[in-house]
Length: 116
Length: 113
Image (cartoon, rainbow over all chains, first blue to last red; front, side):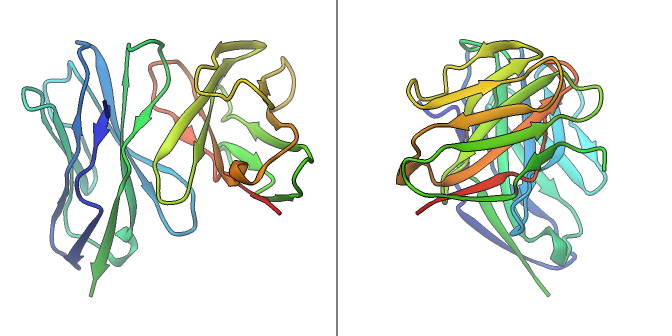
């Protein structure tokens, strides 16, 4: 079974608008962490934001916020005031106890395109 | 640049040759992870190392692939007798602690002729 599911292969948003990228996860652990990474066309992986399963507040980092709904097992990324430079592939990832500690499970990604 | 350093950025090998990919973690980070990304896919975990120890290699193919993280020097991912299917982007990540966010290098794009 997929640990991380990103159902939107592609998303389009106009500059200055907000956009939500969906992510659902599957784990039976109580302790886990959720991450979002950005991969521009140049290929590097850029860490954006982290949410721990015990964190009571939704994580925020600048224009990025994570809409964490534990009961629904969703961890959607919200980008406010989109910029042209936000166009990239976005990956949701999870770390849980699983069979080992440390490894991240990644979704297949969502390609975000910001248009003027 | 205090980030995770990977080299080379691009590597071309012929079938049957060996590929060596290097990764220097961020300063203060002793946990290193290797991931592989095939075209149009997310990253797949390969191996997790701490200094001189392999913690988890369950994602690494049993044959031809090996990884090390010596006491001195970078972590090395080694692929022997490369085949076309090894063509991919290989990413290294590091963290200060197992529970801290992982920071990634720019990746090595391996192409097999």
